[in-house]
Image 1 (cartoon, helix red, strand yellow):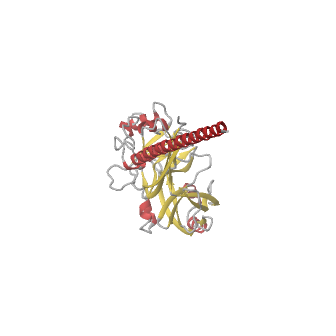
Image 2: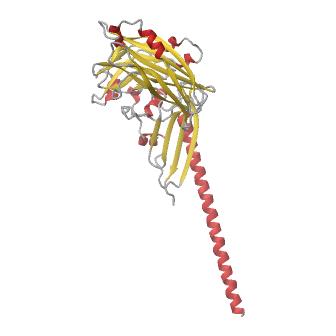
Length: 399
């Protein structure tokens, strides 16, 4: 009897010891995991502050790529010399954008970024998007007499935030600029001959319609049919939602035509098969629209000059092979979020829209089997517009 009780007592004691050991081990593992999570969060905070609050080294690396391309000593997107926190440099941000239609010749890839940010032992995703984003669809075209192509006349605008939630009750202003291309002895030139304005408000689904049909019809009644073929249409969409502002643009071009390019510093980079006319860059002065209702002053036409193989900018961008056309633009407004180019492609005039508030995603790898993941979100400013910056950092499996 006593022996049985002793066996039971020993068994209970061993079980208690095992349970206590497991509890201590689990507690220790929780503490270690918590410490590792805190370390990862600290690393993420350090990287986010570095990206948004420092200009990098050299501080003008975004625009002065002829001297510093591929030789960065430190990485940061802050505008050099600014006293406003979270104000980003557009020339640095555009170095992280890589359009599918036209690869960025000065793109900073994820491995180079990981080296500059000391993230070689981590996985990461750096994503940057506008706080408000438009989707623009052309619903109807205006048939211009004597013209092979039609001008967009009625557009549907859909507004969403960075979570892809539709935004109702936003005030949408559409500025329609008619650009006339005039042929001359020294080359073709683009001039803005008329500006129309339409306003609407997004409905419960975040959509609205802008109709310029009547304005276009009235304008072209006074234009001789022989001159109508020299006109292109450009629409600037400006949205204000409770003080948050967004701008977008669309133009006149067939679906298969080149659709985009890059503005880096004082240079424009486009496909090699496209030729800009000498006076071809329509600069959108976005800050004017918020205070001045004279929308003609919103748009400025600037001249461009083709760079040749002897130019340092051409050599850096093309890397020894002719893959891109490079133009120097005579004037770029600091707050111009869009540049609209008038180009000749396959014998016809088209517009190319360059959005300087790009959607950026730099991804080192997929977060498969990650032991710890930290996500940070902050709102910066780009051209005085809210710009959402998301950073995800993770470690792989940990022993």
